[in-house]
Image (cartoon, rainbow, N blue to C red):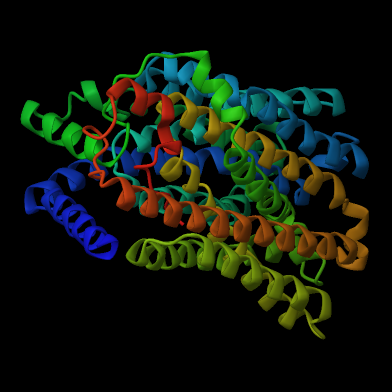
Length: 486
C-alpha cells in the first residue's frame, strides 16, 4: 500500500516537473540566463581579479618597493579576509532589505575605486589599510549573487548557473596572468612601477563595468522589468511550486536566528572552510609556487594561465554532470581527492615538469569543488531570509579558512617548495570531504524519513496545499514536504 502510494506521489511530482519544463519555460529560462549570467559572471571575474592580482604584483616588486617583509605581506593578505568575514552577513542582510539592482553595482563601483588606490600606496601601512578596505567593499558580491539566483531559478537549475558564475574566478586567474605579463611591460611609464599599473588599470576596468551594471543587473523576480507580465507570472508559478522564492517574505529576525541554529547551515560553512583554505592559498600564491619550481617571474605569470583555464573547463563539465544526475556530494568529495592527488604530485614530483602537472590537478579539483559546494545551501535552505544568512555564513566561516591559508603559505617557505603548507592543504581537503560525507548521509536519511512520513499520512507533496502558507514559511526546509538535494 505504501509503495503504491509513494509511486503515485513520484508520478505526480514528475508530472508537475514536466509541466514547468515546456518549450515556453525553456525560452523563459534562456531569457533570464542572458540577463543575469553574463553581467554577474563578469562582476565576479573582476572581483576575483582585483583581490588576487596582488600575487602578480608581488612578482613585479611590490614588497621590495614598499619595504614589506614576508610576514607583513601575509598579514596584508589576511586583512582582506578579516574584513570579508566581518562584513559578509551584514552585506546580505542589507541586500535582502533593499535592491540588488542598486546594491551590487554600487559595491562594484566602490571596490573598483579601492582597487585603483592599491596602485597608489607608498608604504606598508597603506597596503594594510587598502587591503582591509577592499575586503569590506567586495564582501557583499558573491553571497548577494548566489541569493539573487535563488529568486530566479528553481533549485535544480541553480548549480549550473552558479558554476558558470564561479568559473569567472578561474578565468580571472587565467586573464590575470596574461594581463600581469602585458601590464608589467609598462614599468616606468608615467614614473610608476609595473605593479602599480596592474592595480590602476584593472581597477579602472572594474569601475567602467560597474557603471554598465546599473543598467543591466535586475531587481527582485517579483518586479523584474525585463520580463513581460505573462513571463513574470510564469516565473513566479515555477518558483512557487519548487520553493519559497516566489513569496514576498518580509524581513524577520526569527529567520536570521533560525539559520544560526541549523546544524546543516554550519556544515555548509565548515565545508567551504576546508575548501577556502586551498582556493585562496592556491590562487594568491600560484605565481610564487610556479616560480619556486625554477621558472623566472615572467614565465611564472604566463604559466598560471593553463591550470586556471583547465579549472574553468573542469568546473563546467563536472557541474553539468552533477546537474544531469541531480547530486552534489559525490562530486564534491571526488573533487577534493583530485586536488589531493595534485598536492601529492607537487610534494613528490621528481622534476619541475611533473610538479607543474600537479598544479593542474590541484587547480581543477579545488575550483570544481568550490563551484559545487557554493550552490548547495542556495538549493537546500528555506525560507528566503534564512537562506540569505546561510549563504553569507558559509562565505564568512569559509573565509576564516582563507585567512589561515594566506598566513601559513609564508613566502620564505617557497625555498622548500611550500612542503609543510601543501601537507596542511591536504589535511583541509580531507576535512572538507568528511563534512561533505556527513551532509550526504544526514540529508539522505532525512529525505527517506520524510518520504515514509508522507506515505503514512497520505499527504500530497505540494508546497502550497498540504500546510498552511504561514506555517510552511516558518518551517522552511524542515517541513516534512521539503526534500534536500544531496
